[in-house]
Amino acid sequence: MPVAMDAVQMNTRIDRTLKREGDAALAAAGFTPSQAVRALWEIAVRMRREPESLRDYLTGTATPSQAQHDADAAQEDIEADDDEGLRAHKARVQAIQQRFEDIGIDTSTPYADDEDDRDALGEILMERYWEEHR
View 1: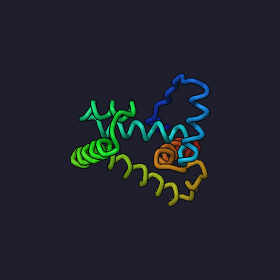
View 2: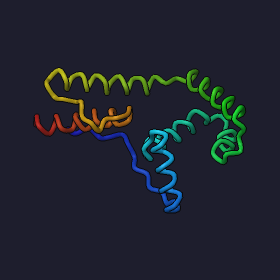
View 3: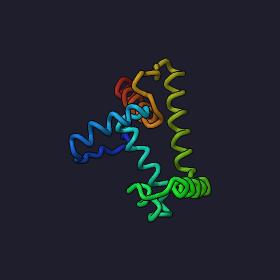
View 4: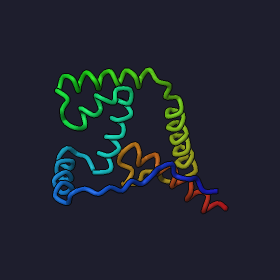
């Protein structure tokens, strides 16, 4: 029985020049566009209790000290929240990857370069395992 990947694909339209210049800026900072979008969504989640601050941050009207203060406050909220579901999910993915390694399936592929990719890799490997062992 294949495991469904818990991911969504997003499509957006932006100006071609903005895309090209943004891709270059992100690459210089060490980000792919997908990593940058994930980071933006993580910022939005951290700042979810302060929508005005998030708006200021996204429009560039927040001062550096205000942005840092808002980010610190948002991080404190996140740490105070119950993140058991996320921790449990990551533990399951790690356990699955360990099980694959225990039975001889190599999980060290070059495209698993960040945490989200490693999570997706675990799900893909699980699908592959079930396809091979039906």
